[in-house]
Each structure stands twice: as structure tokens, then as C-alpha cells.
Length: 313
Image (cartoon, rainbow, N blue to C red; front, side, top):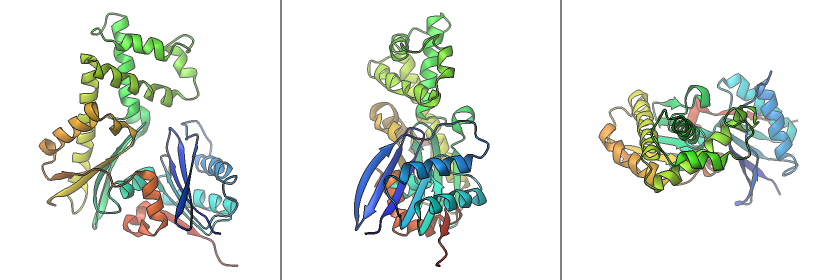
């Protein structure tokens, strides 16, 4: 029986769907971490083969929606060829996890999807083209992301500890969350999962906001504002959307599960900034989008997806 493989590969984890005869078997593995690499495409391809080969000896079609997908088509092709050879696959598609998030949330339709998990990025697509906003990583962007919220919360806690900022319950939360980190906060920089460790503090910022902590509430307000601005940016720059009425907008990513402090203020602010936005609940997540691409929806994303096919013997 042939097996198709769909992968949603983010910083926090890999979600894998093995699809056989229309039924999907789900698996989870560790995600990608930012680390120095002489050849990132080769390193990522090798890591993917190591993860996938024990699950499927021979794959028919493989769709990889990756947070660290190479920006250039030539590098995506090289990654796809390595995975194709490693899994004896017939067909491999490589794209960004933003594309699979878009395909999942809007079920392959045109419009805008903003994704917020550990990182944050927005993608607009129309029949005339596409536009992207942010997704620049934790050092240069990802505004409104789980990492950004966690970092803002930690900064506020450290400032409060030293009397440089307002009192906040985030002080206690930080001490409890990072009690096992030697020489906190400097010890965080020596941990292999720095990005994930900081993003995890977003949960504590949500709990503090639940307790009506003013500092935490302000952090979530800022996150919602940044994500709305990201949507405004792609609507303005995407051919065919700037003058469209309405513009479908949806969302993806675990951070939007913080309904009261992120999703609700995002939904309230969006029509004030993007009047033509028609906010819709997501039809599916990024893994569902990867499965849709398996079924043939890749053509609608044109140059955003790189495909390699085995040459018949």
C-alpha cells in the first residue's frame, strides 16, 4: 500500500501525517532549532530523512511545510532531492509552513492568513500574486509571536525585579518557570532550546493577564496590534487584494488559542485598521494544509512551492 507523507515542521515540533487510502496516521517529533550550520539545507534534509525513514520505508508523495524552508528555489530543490532519495519517494514538494497554514486555514482559497506560534508571519494570496509580512525570526522580527510575548514578559519581570519597571506578578512567574536555570537569566543563553524556552513564558503572560495584571495585559494588546499591522501590510501589497471587497482573513498557530487576550482583541482591532477584512475561523491547521497540497492544491501557490519528481527508470 502506497503512503503519502505530509509534514508541518515548526520550531516547537514536527507534526507528521502518513496518509494511506484516505486515512491519516499522526505522529509528532521534535522541531527545528536555530543553530549554526555550514549547509542548512543539507542539515535539515538529513534531519528530516532521519525522522521520516523509520515511519515510512517508501513514500509516494511527500509535502514538507517547513518553518525554515530555504528562501531560494534552488536550495528548496536540493533539499527536496535529498529527501526524495532518502525516502525513495516519487514526488516531493517543499514550501514554507506559512503556505501550508494558509492552505489549511482558507481551504486553498485566496485571502490572508496570519500565523502566530513560536514565530509569526502573514501571507496574502490572490489570482494575481502574493505578499508576505514578517517571519524574520526571533532576532529580527516575529512580532506578535509566542517568542515576542514571552520575551516581553521576561523583560518586564527583570525590570520589575530591579525597580526599573512597574510591579507585576510576572516576577514570581519567571522565578518559578526558570527555577532550574543556573545563573538566571544569563543561563538561558546557554540552553540549546533558547527560543522555545523564552516562548514558553507566553503561557505565564497569559495566566498573568487572566489575573488582570496590567503589564501582562499590555503585552497581549501589543501582540494583537502587531499581528493586525502585519495583515494590513500584506493586504496593501498583494496584487488584487488592495481594492478587493471583502478580503477573507483567517489565522493559524497555537498562540491564537489565547482567545481572550489575543484572538478577541485581534478581531476587534482588525476592521478598524483593515475595513475590508472578513475574519473567518480557520477551516484547518497547517498540517491539514499540507494534506491538501498532497491532494493537488499546490498549483494555486505557484512559485511558493518547489516540486521534484523522480525520473522513471
